[in-house]
Amino acid sequence: MSDSSSLPARPVIRRLSEQVVNRIAAGEVIERPAAALKELVENAIDSGARRIAILLEQGGINRIEVVDDGCGMTPDDLMLAVERHCTSKLRDETLVRIETLGFRGEALPSIGAAARLSVTSRPHGADSAWRVTVEGGLVSAPAPCAGPAGTRVVVEDMFFATPARRKFLKSPRVEGGHADITVRRLALSVPHVAFRLQLDDRVVFDLPGQDMAARVAAILETEGADGMLPVEGVKGDLVLSGFACGPSVHRATAAGQILLVNGRPVVDPVLRTAVRVGYRHVIEHGRHAVVALSLTIPPDMVDVNVHPAKTELRFADPAAVRGLVIGALGRALGGGAGVAGVRPGLLQSRAAGPARIWYPPADPAPARPAAPVFAAPGPAAFSGGRLDLGDRPAARVLDPVLPAVPPAAGAGKGAAPLEDEGAVLADPADYPLGAPVAQVMGTYVIAVSGDGALVLVDQHAAHERLTHERLRAQYLDGTLRAQRLLLPEVVTLPRGQAEAVLSRAGTLSALGVEIEPFGGDAVLVRALPALLGTDDPAGLLRDMAEEMAEDDLADADEVQALDGRLDAILARMACHGSVRAGRSLTRAEMDALLRDMERTPRAGTCSHGRPTWLKLSRADLETLFGRR
Image (cartoon, rainbow, N blue to C red; front, top):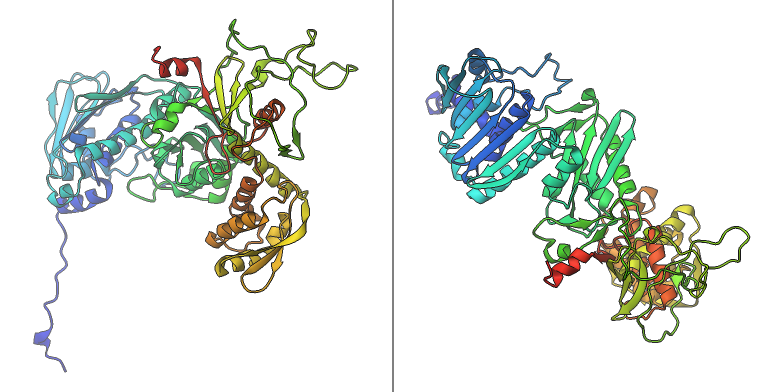
């Protein structure tokens, strides 16, 4: 038997003091100044405020001040407000129908346990204001003071009572950046409330109460309230609304994504994944979309009591939410080229500053005297989804020409010739990409739009998207035809890639690519999709093999994999079947390319997410030449 004297002393369980309990709990709720600011602004919004002013010093480390004109609090309310788990926001104790931003009753006690807190409040109609202070968890008695109707909260010396936590704070610039993002999300959730944010001596923004479109434009810093694509969707009791930038507008982080659920800003993985999937076919890999989406869902179908920060949710039916967001974004982004274009300034600073996008005005711009004449070109040169690319003479500058209005019933077929003075010219507003005037460097098509703006088109990127969409549509319809090679080609691949390709032979056959093993690491190619031609079967197969070898998804024969694996393969195929840079195009070919871009979904970007066209307005050109 062991000697009982050698056992360690039995630890004694004791009750922690209220101050220690508060400091421990504060670490869950208040992890940085931005978290404290979020709780204070949420309280201001819940109080019915119509204007909220915020002042931060040193990123909120030294001082946070939030002033609102809400309902205010009495002295008794003030004492309860700084006591843990006291709240006016829960109508019952079921935690099911939560309709306010705050409800846990932890914010002010947690802040007071970690910093120096002062709350001054005056109800509307009261004779005076009252103030209560909390310092390191020690609460003072309310005292009368002067103050306007509403509430003013001041937080100083963040984490002075918990030095270990204070040491982990970042620089004032970084902490201020987190606070800025936090306030922007909250300001977007209540566009009717005026917001003012000041960091030290700099006013970041001062916004009046406004509609959602104007608030989105101001918060996400786009060019005007019409600088976003509207997003709408309904699925049962779920309603989605908001705005999304076109695929050519993206940022290095997800900071440009503001997601609301029942008016609550959230950072939810289900919604973020849905946004990423919705943009997957049209945005560059590694970039993040810019969106502001608001989901309305019955309160009993979502649990907001998942984390003390209240930014994570649990949906009763996450698949329905994900499908609604993906579908709504797909419809919003499904327009042809010309709906939204990219200005050159975006490409010069897209990794840093906010992106700018262009949208056509609601009313067509008045015609200028110097605007080009729009008339009909020769017949379109697209045949079977491909450009007729025979030997062409060197490109030349052309007169801008747009198609004529189709002839009336009984009239002769075909477009009216340029010389026909009786031809009725088409409305330039129907052709957002305008009329081609030249091809430069054998790669870029120059066009002039109806309002006189300059349009630049990357012919390879544009035709790649057109081919991709045709391949995808034919695959889904079951009409993708294969064209057998006159002489089957043997392609040698690295062992891992050869195995990956051969294991998916059935899937590739549905895409019009017929292959079979040829011994060792060789693969025999017998047929390719007719839409692509048969110019480079070896290069196409090698690219597809590389795509498949890197793919880590499950069963390759699942139809659900189309939006992931197969679409990436289709993109590779489209790249090989597209008109190359360096090929001269006739005017008919250029015009056919522009018209197809206007009709094809997602034609504003290529299959890899790069822009297919740019637009320079008169103001852009004047800026470039220093005339502004």
